[in-house]
Length: 446
Image 1: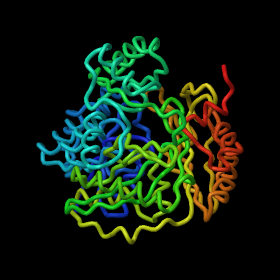
Image 2: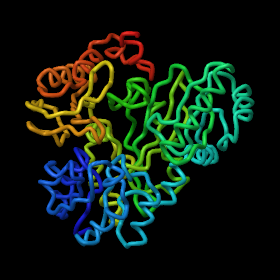
Image 3: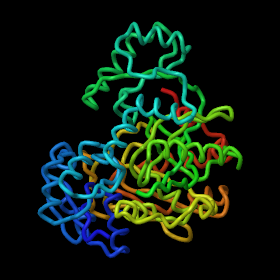
Image 4: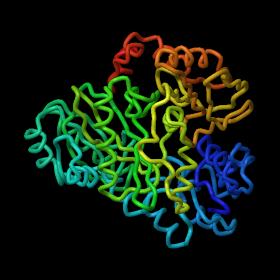
């Protein structure tokens, strides 16, 4: 087992890793930027190292600084959390060269599954259903147009090397194609230093369903069932739940076993997520995330498995103690991402939190690094807390989440709590009638 783990991240996920390490008896090292010197992950870690100025490219994304911090603190492993360097194969490779264990899959798998077109091709080889589209990045506009006509509009253009909605454009007709192609390539190049674009058929009203995968270094891979992640804006998730209300037991078995088949095909290790689009009783592989997800707590709630501990144990060469038959669905869980932003315009609202009273009571969990007096920095993501509830049924979960949101008091900055309450009151949400278009259908049209 590891003696000391450095956490190459910040905020609530850094704290989440610290809690897991404390329970495993492992010392922790927090790294932080100048803006985060008063953050809770710095306070609760056993050691801390400042790795640079506030901008993330000068601190949390600076590989030499993080490796230096690990070496001077004698950390024998690094947990990357999510975001930042968590899916950077170069970082995982540097860790390996420096004899520091990267808590995640090997760099070769990160590289393979991180490129959407390569991942799609390898999943097709594995027998996992994929959407019709380009097998490789398209070279120019003429090729893109020809392929789009062959597939049939609408199509979606996607950055081959990235995610999070960057370098992504939906095209409904031939006349929109040229401008969309130029914009997608430009944005992809600016965001990922790689302007490669691929094309696939666009589903107009799909659900976004993902399957949590867990593997060890001995070839054992299981699934922990699925999460419903259809409520999004700008391709960023806002509210997640587990399990999905859309799946019958038979469909659940099929999609989860398909995810395991794909993960086994590439020899996956550690925690990961297979993401699918689901429409009209058919599902299609979309992408794989080779890291822990923001929404992992809903899976923990319905399975009773600590995913961060499982990651650490897998990286430490421990054999998985679970088999597939051990994984049961226990009740229902919903997570709301509480962001410091205008609730309807989605504009970040950095500033100082003057009052911070978290929700409590039965079945309520809050993952956060915020507190009264905490300054929400303009340099990072606007997420300030994850409010997670669990109950026996989905309807009980909705009632519990509403109660929890109403008692969660945050003053000094705007938050999206009013939007979450609006979502919970929507008839389609209550009935589980969700698609990725859900938010744009309930928000005022401008």
